[in-house]
Image (tube, rainbow, N blue to C red):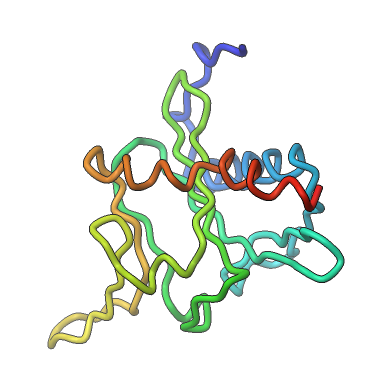
Length: 161
């Protein structure tokens, strides 16, 4: 097994952290045998597309954080205010000296919000943020998040490879 003793992420800027997350997600999917198609411009909330067979594709948005706790979100307008069967968020958690953790999360989880998967509309007076779907990454929520480890998705979908 590869040791990550010398891998740290603290010195990287946010753009570099984001790119590492995207590359790491693509490596996992390529390793599983999926075809990956990268968009040249990320202005639609999609970082890449996975073709699982001739008739199916999955749109993927990647979010990367450097620690095991925090909050990430996708504004609803980026996903055209819809949660589709073929829309996924890949969450990559980078922790110094450890192999990155990767989670493959179907957008439909936000149909039933939990303490982990939030649905925020910011409709109260004075709230100016755009509506968003978010993930509360905390020690308390890690057990719920584990069900979305990317290795589980790949194992369940080997028939496409």
